[in-house]
Length: 387
Image (cartoon, rainbow, N blue to C red):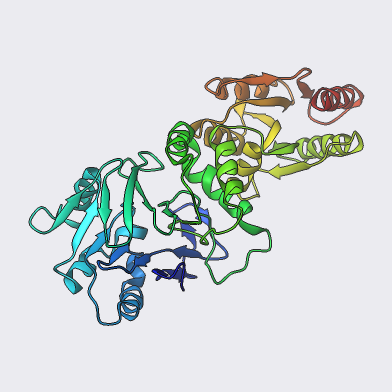
């Protein structure tokens, strides 16, 4: 696939993977992207997952058309991108590997060699590499989302090679009817969400660069409305509100807390809420619920008291949020308990580390099942959420 006259795509699609990074379901597969920049000197941008080494090398050979690459640029050391470094060097032993100092340290950890015994080039922030008419500038992007990450900017074609940033779940031969944002959002908040400050820092470095395309290591090459992707990343990384709406996340043992969650959702819709998302945390894809809870400005958590604490799925979910720096939200709480309700207290305790949360009153208390009093509390909470 041709990105520009001089840049070719040689990535692969993985339709056999069940869990990305051992935890994220990828029903539409996964793309491992790699690129070649053809100039007086040739640069290859990253490798692919170990299972696709032969296919990738074949694609590379076809693009090279008898030439040999001068450089392999390693932007990110996760094995789904770096697994074929040594195989590449077996095929092209005279090539120079270009990467950050931390990457070479990681190469020794992963593959037994930091390549100090062969041609390598250590680059840092704002280092440059001339290929001919193309000039590359490297942008350090530590903790987006590993410490060794670098981006690469080609000033000639105005293309940003962005490592894992701006990536999404899904193979490239799958046409996502929901577009880029849905699976990019789940990808971002699941994998990069904790590192908003670091994403903000690299966005500042990119500000003002003329961009014709963004080439991530996962997902499609982005070539249109690039300001929209940058603005979306700015919203995500600053923990802002992307969409107006309310998410209700609940767990339920015998159905009574679920009934309360659905009753609240109905009240919110009646009162004109533009979007209400409801997630049963025991049954939904939890990263989808994480995505919703970052996306909207208001969230409700409803759960049962369990062993004088909170129900396990809710506890796990709140840990997912807090470890990703969930913040700047308005929160409603619903607790259920048959003899000693303590779930609201437990949820608040788990959220203590989150910044800028506004907790609404009333806290809805259900004693086993909804009754006239708790239904009135739901109505009051709905009013508070819509205020």
